[in-house]
Amino acid sequence: MAGKESLDKPVAPASRSWWWWLLPALVIVPWLGQPPLGWWPLGFVANVPYLLVVSEGSFGRRGYWMLFLGAFLYWALTLQGLRLAHPVIYVCWLVLAAYLAVYRVLFVVATKRLVARGVPLAISAPLLWVGMECIRNYMLSGVSAAMLGHTMADVPIMIQIADLGGSYAVSFVLVVVNVAFFETATWFLRRSKGERPFPVSSCALAGVLIVATLGYGAFRLNEPTGEPTTTFALIGRNEPIEYFQDEGRELAIFEAYARQSILAARESPQPVDVVVWPESMFTGTLPWMIGDGNAEQAMEYGLSVEEVRRRLGEFRSSFRARTQLLQQRMTLPDRPAPDLLVGCGVVDYGEKTRVYSGLLHLNDRGAVKHWYAKTHLVMFGEYIPVVEWLPVIRDWIPDDIGLADGDEPRFMPVRQTSVLPNICIETAVERVAMHHLQRLRDTDGLPEVIATVSNDGWFDDSSVVQHHKRCAQLVAVSCRRPILSAANNGPTCWIDSRGVVVEQIPQGGVGNLFARPRIDSREAFTLTLGDWPARLCGLALLATLCWRRRVVSDSSDEDPGDGDPDDNEPVPSA
Image (cartoon, rainbow, N blue to C red; front, side, top):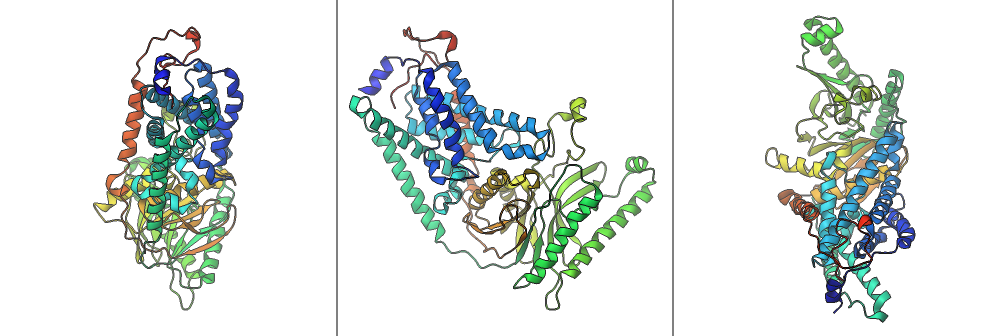
């Protein structure tokens, strides 16, 4: 039998020449399935180049370096929009691409080891791929962009299983299909030599999973949802952003969004209950200030504590007066003033001065009813690890980098709808919104809508913005909650609880969306179980990488100075 022969006979090292056509495939095939082109059918074959590497017995350390190069080029191309934020980010962009490339190399190493120990590729590959995605979604604050499951973001029937296991569930099914396609293609190419039997088991598993996925998706898509209760106006613009903006530019941005909001209130076919502004756009040189100040802050500004407190009161009065003026201009004779849900800087003058990226709920009288501080900051954008211990690097970093993180999620009753506020990357890292909902369920109850504000103006019109939207689509299904996204040059869109983009402003465009999200009373299974299945897959990946067993080989063709750690392990036929 083919499998027994391969166990008894070591596989010769692969030829170096095959890398020159495999290397482009490692870059181009996965990239085409993601934005900006988003050719979703390629999600079913995006992993085939990596599976081909897994099937090769021994190709040496140079082969692994070529594998790393292919993965690095893929990530550099996929995330190239990050470099546009600031010249310093060019280095961070390349470092991030190299970091993410390591995961794909580890996936290949671990999968080869499991296959060498007799675990079928149709089982080992999907489990370890999900484990790899899970680990990278947690390590170093987490990167969820461009998960394999995101290739199906615009195929609603394929992503409904995300409420069972998040984006990981979609990725799992796709990898199984990739394996079936790969093994079938391999059998077809080598059938004349009789080297491999037809892969019945992998094709059957892929068929069962696809039928189950489509059946479950059709069922979920046809389930009824509740009636809408609140009208939200999502304000989207394309205001250029720079790290070093003077007060004049900051006020100009505020005034542009104010004019757009007034226009939205007058254009709406029905009364607007809530107007939503993107992240930080409401600041306009006047952040919301909390706390009463202390002696240290008074000394810093050359004032007494009482003078600091008086000035803080004056700032808060000015903030409310400006808000009320804006709301008055949005008020029509037959329509009341709307509430505001706005991205705004928050400065806490408590025991220690802290600056937050906040989302404020202002009622129709301009008073701050609730506010939320961003809990998940952007690495290299809002904080840089260990920079406090590297003063030389600190001098290179723009002054705006260095926000404090919030401590917990917020349940915001906004008119007739309860809202979970998220800011920026918090809908781009799937676990954040999921964990927020899990925490609130046991205290205030589950919010009905996720409102997220973002400032993607840093990335111009690159595909990074589309990756952000796809993350939000999968989050909507994973949590079974509609997502209302207001962004500056980003995904200003209304996504329903099925992950379908109901309406959106074209990237780089200017406009308003009037969203009336339907209330979904379904509770996703992910909110009960969390992402523990994916975490177990992550543990399996780590255990496989740590479990190393060498088998002595008599092959004279091996290059002991150029082999990978498991070169001497015989690889059974797939």
